[in-house]
Amino acid sequence: MSANAGALAGIRVLDLSRVLAGPWCGMLLGDMGADVIKVEAPNGGDDTRAWGPPFIGDQSAYYLGCNRNKRGIAIDFSHVEGKLLLQKLVQKSDVVIDNFKAGTMARWGFDDAWYQTHAPQVVRCSITGYGTFGPKAELPGYDFVLQAESGLMSITGVADGAPVKHGIAMVDAASGMMAANAIQAGLIARFRTGLGQRVEVCLHDTALAMLVNVGNSHLATGKDASRYGNGHPTIVPYTTFATQDGLIAIAVGNDSQFAKLADLLGQTAWIEDVRFYSNPARIAHRGLIETLIAEQTLHWHCDELILALRCKGVPTGRVNTVAQALEDEHARVRGMVAQIAQAGMEFKTLGIPLRLEGTPAGIRLAPPRLGQHTREVLQDDLQLSDHEIAELYALGVVAG
Image (cartoon, rainbow, N blue to C red):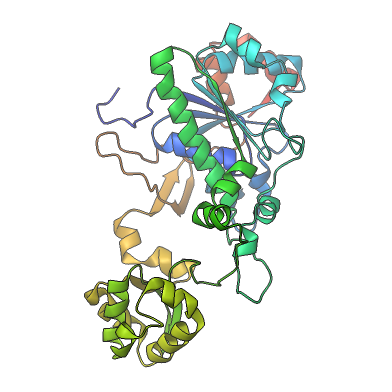
């Protein structure tokens, strides 16, 4: 194995999941060097393969965005032979990820007792909507619903408007990251105990945890949270302001930065004004100070004001579109727009945000086509004979 192989090189992950949270988790592990085998049903596979447009060739951009660095196989688990293949794959794995409805794997025979007897080394991660216990445990989990139920929508949007969901499926994405973190903790614990363990991540828990300071403020005071548009519940001014040619975000984190902002805008009287001289005072007069600042920023061009604020040490940035953000020079230099050109596929994708100097993350494999590596895995990983493989294809147990 190369000295600078990915941090998880040598770890085999069986990814039984589909849509976003589980595949995102598997991709993160794959980016860090794990050998990830994505298992799909032969009749269409992962739902996101059809979630378009946009498509790149016959592949949806959605699917391509969360399934790189994986080998793909197709197995029909409705066949007894399919479940037997799954047993063999699990026993050869270090990690198993699934996001089936709670209890599905146990009903297939893969309960704690089976793992203890047949695959005690495996860290198995279950990603569900509401977990394996509690009054909602049987319900399916959908990001949009969880954004609503968790209160995240209630704190997003303008103060006098309706609750609004986030622009991405952030509960799914965050759950995938939580799962990747928990799996790696399980693998580290295995070095100490010699045993794998069951890891549970659910969208409901993740969504509530994402309330962070807002949730803790409610628990501290008993007061429900409010919407502040682009503002911050406990820091002012910390919002967007219009200039002559664009919106900028100004994030004043302390009284010193506020004084620098006031000085730059030619309003030094604000610094000593009892309504504005401290953050609690500015919160009490949020509407007034934000209005006064907005009147001043309209005298500036966007880039000119950003440069002036940064020179003063006041955090700021342009409110970009997605296109502008991905075309930014800093994104290019940091490799956050990557190119995949493998196996007849060529497309741009989001880069890897993880930087590990000694064991670098990287893109090794394009997202697999449905069942692309089925024969390879059966032959090389499971050591099945040509005759056995031919029978599985003939019975419709596998595809690809």
